[in-house]
Length: 220
Ligand SMILES: [Zn+2]
Image 1 (cartoon, rainbow, N blue to C red):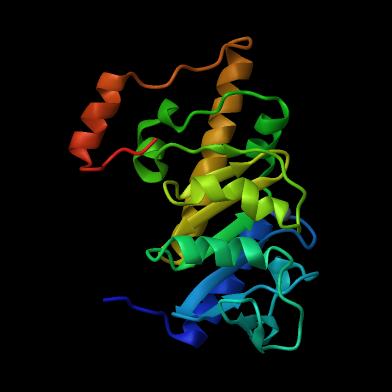
Image 2: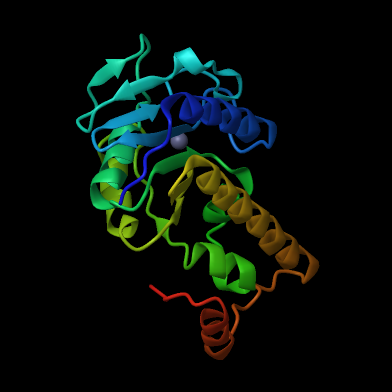
């Protein structure tokens, strides 16, 4: 049975996650956006043009599955279509978080092949993390570029742009983003410390062992 969050609790959590994103340098200025599912056809989303580090609970907006504003006086995020697409493709998710983590984004600029299978716990938590090709932000191009990856992945890197994490609730989506950016830092440090060598992923055998220990099914 589907369980939905209490609305006032969801608003409090969204304001709190916004502050954490800003303080951790995962967004700057008015970057990023997030949403969470209140029930089958109501979603809380962050407003456009506001710093997510300093939001108030009443600045948040409630929209329906078509993006029509039901509550709130501000304009919803320009990436609302991306969020609604994710909910329409994934019955199992309750939150969507888009941020601009600098290290993982720099890795896409450097065209380095980031693979979540370099670190066991990252691979167990996030699975394979694909890179969606560049698309113009705030247009219909972005949902189209990300669409092929949504059904089978909970964390997606956006080329030259940032990240998208999908989870049952907003805190889990935030933790996934934190883990991804921490792994990107470790990946970049490893390349610097080894004079440019790309760290190899764990072997197929080691991944199979992890999948068995943590009882996960592997998608590609
Ligand atoms: Zn963005």
